[in-house]
Image (tube, rainbow, N blue to C red):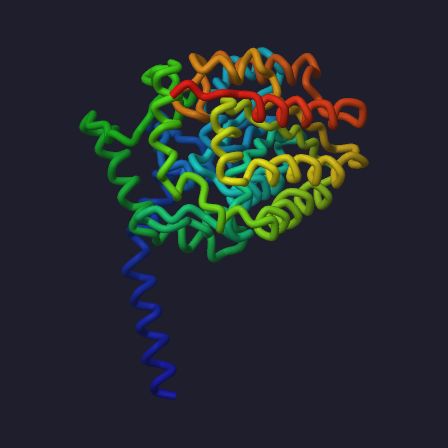
Length: 352
């Protein structure tokens, strides 16, 4: 009995000690977990895995964009105008399919968006079906979960307190932390400080040849790829029939497909596309857009800063195509589009 009382007192004392810090975190709410800022000018932190759940919870939108860094340069104003929708962009550098599913579930729980533009990046399907990116701070699962513990972990977290301090420092002293962005339009965009040129794409090709981490065959087993597809994509879509999923394959340069082919991984990429199509073709809440066989884009290496990342003009082309309903995959063109890409990869000669 005395032991129980002792532990109860310890827990109570801990909660009392944490209360002032929790109150600061609740009032400042640095990641906008509860509300958009009221007493200070909004800022956004570039640690996407922390910031994005807050944006999904408190921004005003009817359409969400979820993906990797390939979606970073979708400008809110451009998408809003092209699609006549209020959007929130929730891109995460190097996101796995599991991370994208976690993000989508936050969006769906808010009941704000009836449509999600959802990137299908072959590299996101690698590894285990619960793979996350572990930064120095770990992955903030609590930001993506419901329940009282998610609130407790957010409010009592030293990371939240640090961000609260940085916001107060900016508000009262004018000292802006380097991870802050004041304009949501520019949040995690990089088009303005990147050089898109053939030389950079070829340089990346050369650097990747002896870099196993760029595409480790052990991470690209068909079991991993299929598990990620079933658990993190197909189940998500089938479980949410009232949400429209606009899936798209980003237009990587032809170099990356050639690189994957050299590592005997390209045929699994094609198999993945076939598998996704077969398992979504009869679902009314899915459209698939495939830009990877568009030679006028993917063979023009001046569109790229490396083998995969493309210029903002390509982001705009993707949105314009979605607005016009162009490059949709269907029963009539699926085989031809796959054959186009297979032929292009087989015939392409890299001038390195």
